Image 1 (cartoon, helix red, strand yellow):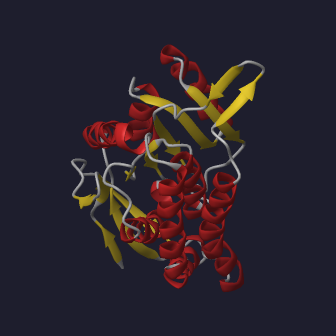
Image 2: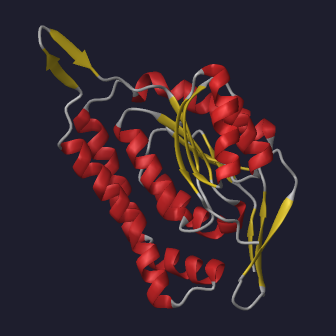
Length: 251
């Protein structure tokens, strides 16, 4: 049984301030397969502060510098595909053929971000005016339990390609695959604070991300009800919001 006791803030695996433990189980067998210690509001504040501190540096990196980091991410995630497949099979009760596809998607998502960045120009001419696209700030990335590793890599790689730093709140139900992906991203040598991963409950950690004035952008995949709440509360600070809705909870 796996015991996950850390979150990732400012380039380090750290013990959460939160003390709640969430039980992980295999839905096919109903066997308990592990526990995860959840982050709380204090952890969310720390993660946001780390991302904010890293933003001035990361936002000024060149396209070439970002591409170099994204390519290291791609290589590191590809190297963990077998471990990720094992986690997916355990957490989802999925057959291995399905688990293999789900384990390969995170690296594919990073590759897509690399391709997009290679072909993207941040400056364009509009008549006599020059339009320069700049990073918006810290992105809050909230991912669902199904294909969590894929959503993490998809949202994070896109945000980093744009020059944003990120605070990621994955589902507590898929903590094992989150751990594998976090270790891979750490091995890629991403500068401290550029990405932070804090597993916790939506009504706790997610709510801090949603309302925090230092979060400039939210990307959320999940239920319609929560999506409506994010739009309403995010409007207070004019957050940019991207929603993919209609997801159901597993239980």
